[in-house]
Image (cartoon, rainbow, N blue to C red; front, side, top):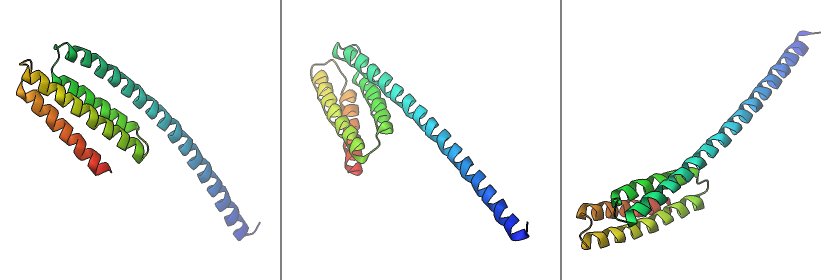
Length: 139
């Protein structure tokens, strides 16, 4: 076999091996991505249960608004991590704004009735403003 044919054959073999390695890497990455998304979904679900549990205690007056805020913001971050499209992210952010508006109103009512400190209202207000800013930036 002459030298040019040997070089072409060697290049063809090298290219084939490289392509096979790239395909294997992509398959491994795809599998890892699926596992990561599955874990992220499990985390979101656990955080949703946490929010639900903390809200029950908040409604009975045994947990402060700050605890609900922390739990809600953790949940929103997990939901945003799972959002794939811009519409998904906007939906999560819009929902977060609505939830934080409601929570701010609850904090105001609790403050007016004497069962919460003004700091809880201010924290709820700041969280709602941050959520509105994030929503506007994402649009």
